Image (cartoon, rainbow, N blue to C red; front, top):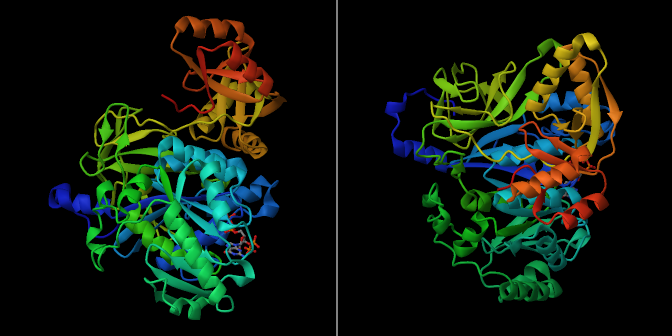
Length: 564
Ligand code: G4P
């Protein structure tokens, strides 16, 4: 991105391919407090994108602010610049997509996951797999997103690492393969054996960083005792034997220098991890690293391995065809819209993930839903935590488009083709309320506001087919407050909420039209449609849903709108 502006003709296809293949676009996800922010910050320090620790903290929604959403929005405002963090590292272009820490904005995170090519999951050694991690992993599994796991806080006591690996496999339903292994933990933490690089990384608590990193291929050597002590050496050997016996084998290490020539060539069959890498790229297996983000321990090793095995932008399935990042002309989709809550600067930024080709400034592109050509003069890129106007960007990059109400989540921008990207999933909300007009003179404004806010993905709208009333579904209470505030301040419309007790909204389908019609007739009071007009069953309790699933065997119930 940035740099000299050149026209299409001047750039050869192979330059385009090289640019795309050196990109790594990913998200770090975790249950709140596992260490996502700390890890992000350490990665940025390595990339030279920031120079002091603490710079990313402003991005984090403070725990004390959980009930004060204005405060949260203020902090989210700050986070626009850090929503995407791009930097160059060892010839690779890294794009980290930030995901909101607050649970009430989980839907934002799900959508962000549609724009990444891989994911790093942070797990706290003391807590193991937590609720939010489980849910986010479901989304990754659904999309077959390659996943790496960083087990954090090894400087604290926690679960036995083997037990944790079992827990990860069971709870996240993915095979795992440790690529580093801890030597003790908590106050006794000595460091890790880096299985991937065949190195011993030693940790000294007082220095809070790697003090010694020793090449260590022959673990039988008595040198090991000298470094970590007798008992620990014995245990490490036994642990590693067990790992080799139980988990998939690693391929022989490539010769020095060989890896770097592989930049851009890590197609599945060329992964430095061999078969294991293929399984990782298919989303079947997660490599696991251990470390301590706070102490900057194990982070560089994670990054070094990540850039080599993580996928570059992958083909994307559009409704019309499979889009190949390096071959097809420019295309991309909007996965997130960030509204500025400051009434003095009421502008939005639409985040576009480039799926194929190259984006160029001041070029005519097609807004497919409007069937209209548009030119973007002030698209922004996100480099080193700064927003800057972008001249060109490539598949894998995220750019920000200033938005004055032109975009909705899922909109496609192309060089001219009519493409529609699949799979921006909606999940069953957790909370539901009827929305009513509190000012009869402003009905039009209210409808427009609801339509636009839903388009931005603030919450989900369902229309009850029985009484025609509008139902808003959210992940948390905060979103209701956000909607009410924004309707008033941006559209001059007043709304009021009426309680509605529902358990889940399920998208339903059936191979038999008759069975579907019969179900809809029997459950007519509980039938609704979503904003795409899809049938949704509103179950008011777990029991009702269970009975419906039992009684109507021909109907399939989905908890996400993405199914096929
Ligand atoms: P999150 O974004 O996943 O919510 O987590 P975050 O990075 O903010 O980390 C949550 C807490 O865990 C922070 O402490 C952070 O300092 C701590 N932490 C992160 N990595 C490690 C680690 O490797 N070891 C230990 N011992 N702690 C770690 P806090 O007290 O909640 O916040 P702060 O006052 O340090 O900012």
